[in-house]
Length: 253
Length: 276
Image 1 (cartoon, helix red, strand yellow):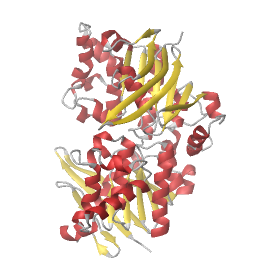
Image 2 (cartoon, chains in turn brown, orange):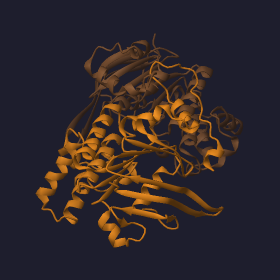
Image 3 (cartoon, rainbow over the protein chains, first blue to last red):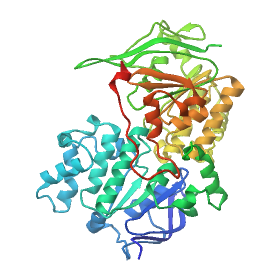
Image 4 (cartoon, chains in turn cyan, yellow):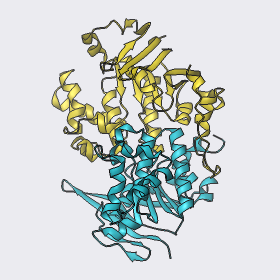
């Protein structure tokens, strides 16, 4: 049984009386310890799927099952302990007036795991490659890459099985992106994590994921294995166009 | 023909621990071409772009041996002279739509503001121009976007709105600071085509600031590679992938590639000597 099962998921937002169909009947499955990528242009609904899983977007049709069980609404603590999200923009996703220590200790306090929180926080910082002295810094005292490391540490505080990654490196420089991707790969191997990753960079998806779903206008266009992506074996014109636009990201580049 | 000439540009900020030079002696000439500036965050590429418009707030200081735009001395220009240049002659697309658009003003009103205030255009004409500008950056539903607030737009849409806004007054020089970093590849290609057309058909000069080396190699004519406030290498964009400088090579090597190895990506070796 797949760890994440998404079946005919639809998300419709109503703004100013107009209906925006952000996601239309999308289905896919992610096996445990696999990494699954979602690619597509902005507004294709890929981030909305991650938000729907977390309960931050209304599910108007279809079902999401994690480990075979439908998700409860509201999501609850058990869900938070199992699934965590890393957001795109580390400048916006960390509270500007909370220290790193507070950001990392909050999930522990909420889940009644506050004992030994000192040791846990220092270990969490070491795990993401930050010196323990960063514990009492504020986000503005960190660089973008360091902030994204804190965001990853926060997501991992409750030892979740699944990480939802919403463009985790698109706000970062090439060199910092490489460091962050290496960090994510290492953590995935060490902890047996399952990734569901959104990116518009096919090279990043190819580097990180086993399978990828191409999306356009809220609909699933084509699902590809990593091998099919690398050998340009896509069938649909849109997936081909997306691939052609990324041609400079090929190995021979 | 030289549109912009910069000689020995320095940008200094005084901090508690003494003066910090963000830009240390940058010189370049720009014709009606596409010049790319690449480097990591903190390399001074954005500060170089802002310094051209003298958009560095005190206590930051801009110094240069010379900085001229079509013969006009930008260092000696008064604030009034600069206001006449900014937007109309030299426009800048800022990096982050979240911080550069007014959050409490509808997108349409922001697009029309310049036309109404500066050109005294009638409302209907301003609206038509604003919608045309949105269509030019491939926004599919311009009427909805005109009535939307910035928070209702995605990052990519916000970036396109800012590009549309800067292109309305038909500038001679466009400084684009990471204009496509929040766009996916297909929209990115469309936006680059728009910029490319403006350079080719109208003879606009373009300074394209980006950390995406592959994009710059494909899109620009000439590239400056910056590291810690200095230009470490200048080369033709087509030669970028064969760059000689170890810093440029490092920046290229740390990019993942489709069909590449899934092992750890090489980390960038930052050698302090390059900054001297």
